[in-house]
Image (tube, rainbow, N blue to C red; front, side):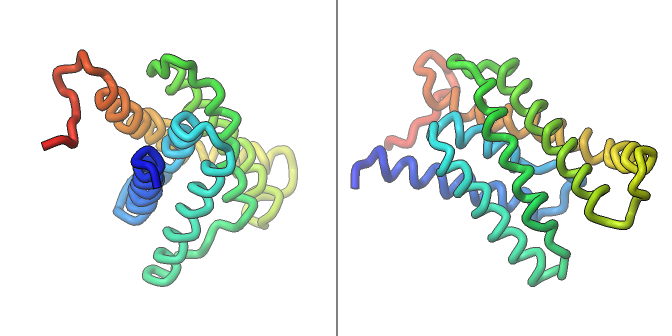
Length: 180
C-alpha cells in the first residue's frame, strides 16, 4: 500500500474519531465537528462515497456508544440523512479554501440541516400541531440549536482547515512536520 493511501486512511480514521469524540464529550447542544468533518472530507478526498462512509461511521459508532452507555435515544435515519446536505454545500468551498468560502459552506450546510431536520420533527411527531403555526413554533424552538450548530461549524472548520493549511504551507513559521 502506498504511503499516500496510508496517509488518507489515517486522515479518514482521525476525522471519524474526532467527530465521534465531539459527540460523546459534554458540549453545548449541536456544537460538534460533524458538519465541518463532512465538509473537509469532501474537500480533501473529493469523493462523495468516502464522505457518506465517514458520516455513516460517525453516527453508527457514536450512537452505539451513546445508546449503550447513556440510553440516549437514536435520532432516526431521516435525521441522519439530513447530514448529507453538507455534501452539496461543500461545493461552495473554492480552490483556495479561504475561510469565507468555508464559512459560507458551513452556514449553508447548517441551514439546510436546520430546515429539513426540523420539518421532519414537526411532521413526524406529535410535539407540535400539524399546522403552519405549529411548524413555525417548531422552527423557533430550534433556533438555539441552529445557533450552536453554525457556531460549531465556524469553530471546527477554522481548526480543521486551519491545521490542514498550516501543514501544507512551507512559508508558515508554524509548519507541522512529522519528520525527526
